[in-house]
Image (cartoon, rainbow, N blue to C red; front, top):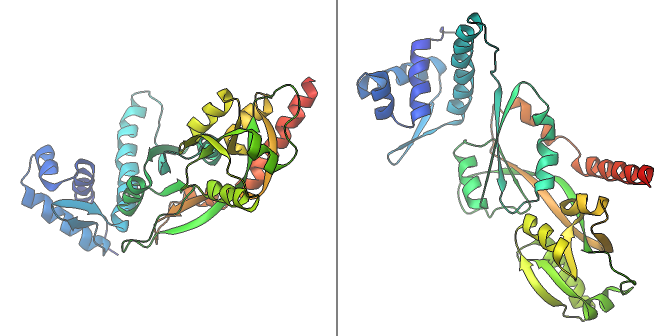
Length: 311
């Protein structure tokens, strides 16, 4: 096995950080061909390509992503060595880069990342965007995982993988009111105004099937594709809102909202989407193996106990 040449590694690190050979050459004050030669030498040592060229852009390969993670640690540690010898505290952490569909429940995202926030050896990057945007970043290895409540279409050669993290039941919620709500779903559909997720949502499609089975066409006051906005409207709307319980967990615990009706068979699935990797991020593995549905149930029971103790 050849020894690692850290001079070559620094050239690679600079190219990966700046995004191009030309920018790295300018920063290092050498010619672009000299930078390319150093990168090729490092790739020869590693036995793997570190960059793919797409058009005029350089994109890190999977091996390049791993090499960059280690290079970040190596050179940051070197900077810390100097800092510590000057009496400062070290701060190096291993990154976990997470993308989330911008309409995804913030409560679910917080539940997923909570263990990472408690770690001293982890630096979390959380990026939100459209499904297509975060999937592009995942394909280019700029993200380790994408959280979504819908699965993307397989329209390219990108062989992404997914696993279901949890299935959260959806229910109809409303602000507390004097008197009782109608007892049957059909009666609720005949008498109430509804705020619903948009038609692309799995829980909306399941709700529409229930309405069709009951031969009802509910009055729809609004259709919303953003869970955070759905939560806000639920607190202000005088009718009923269809929402996963986890989205309004705090409001239900505080009795700002009440569950009017649970809907059998209506649930939202939460997925973790990853790129196939021979060298996965070790900090991510334990997160993906957790049972988030069980954790959410425990959290709800704990909130109930706290309310009972205050009563």
